[in-house]
Image 1 (cartoon, rainbow, N blue to C red):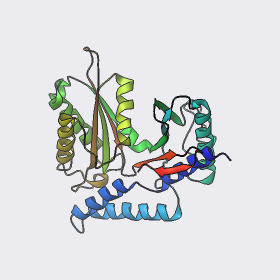
Image 2: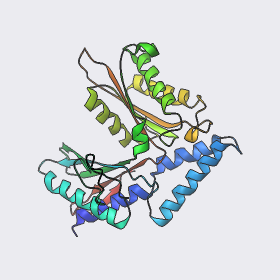
Image 3: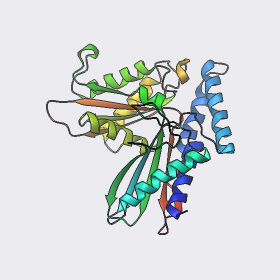
Image 4: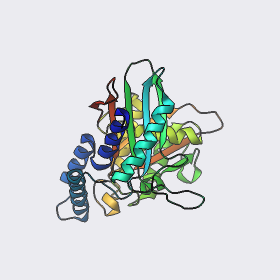
Length: 292
């Protein structure tokens, strides 16, 4: 087994079974602020036990191990074809070992061959940089939270949402209201303002690569992130829709250029099982350090 294959299998295992420190910290803070004896507190305690059990047994945190999405930052000359082939082999082996459940099905026949491989599964995004390092990040995105993602075209008259940041705020909060307890909240929002229909969703998912405790370098977007997080958590939806103070754990927003005729706001929703992990590889393609 090659060093890269071993590294990717371990990346998948850890992403599937262990939540990053920033996510754990956010969930702990959420548990501390919920009222004692409420259903919200009980839901978060069950989540807490689930996290501990998955880590101790090195088993998937959720039965839906989701879509497997790799993001690879690599130097010029890196063999992307070989890397993608190895990523596919790692997904197959991780599935065999039980780190991933057999979640991927053929959209035409409905057949599940048990490998988690197929067109678009896994998805691998490459980005070349002029550094010598190879960084590989992985997101496992479940179907339940994917189902409550939304895309709005502004202006949205029913929401009185115009083509400005206030209009963006209105549709983002509407997406939270529409999700309610679905999507396994408390959730995290990844948002892209602008772009086209396809790139908007892609950029929105890339926001999940950010840490929960970071701050947006754009002051206007930073203010919007903080405002939506505060407002959403005052709606009373709470964990799993049971009521409470924790509807969202984080909001991450980016902007992309658009053509004048279109103004899309694309919103991706991540469940509390925020399975995001990454590694920096050594020259020998073993794991040198972890990114989260």
